[in-house]
Structure formats: C-alpha cells, structure tokens
Image (cartoon, rainbow, N blue to C red; front, side):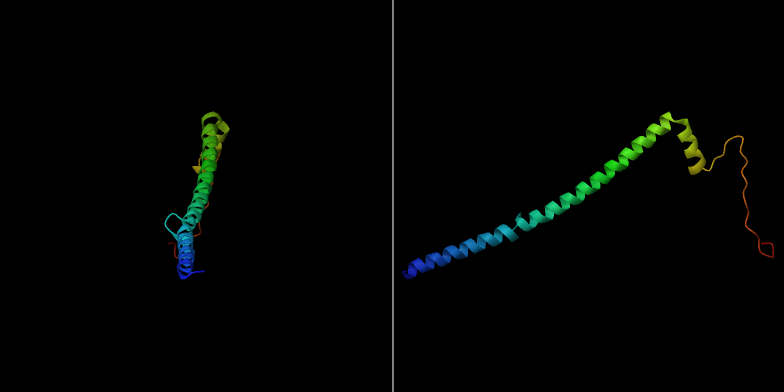
Amino acid sequence: MVMSEKLGVLFSVFVIIILFLLIVFGRDGLMDLKQLKQKEQEVLTQTHKIEEKNQVLAHEIHDLKTDPEYVEHVARHEHEMAAGDELVFRIREKQDAKGE
C-alpha cells in the first residue's frame, strides 16, 4: 500500500470513529434517547396513577349523588355526625390532682 492510501484508510477509520461517538454521545444521540425513554416511562406511570385516582373519585362522586346510605356513611365517619336517634358520649381525660 502506498503512503497516501494508508493515510486515506486511517482518515476514514478516524472519521467513522468520530461519527460513532457523535451518534452515541452527541446531542440527540443514543444517550439522550435512553434518558428520554426513561422520562417517558416515569410520566406514563404517573399518568396511570392519576387515571386510577380519577376513576376512584368518579365512583365516589357517583355514589354521593345516588346512594343515600353512602352519604350517611361519609357524614358519620368523616364529619363526626350522628343520626337523630343516637346519643354521643364524649369521654373527658382525667384532670391532674391540682384540678388544672
């Protein structure tokens, strides 16, 4: 091989290596693609959780609009309400000996 042919081959190999490095590590390269796919998966997971929560809330809204027993349940447990025929007993903590 002539010296100019050797230089041409070395130059070609060098250019190919540079292009490979740019494809992998350059802007919008394979590393960026990997990061974007990971971010996409995180967003899809969050979206799925939010959709599930929306379904639960939609079901609860439906029950609150249509089911009087569920409304009563929510009123009793979340708002500490009692029915008209119930007695509520509140137990007071003992006061210390000085009567404070």
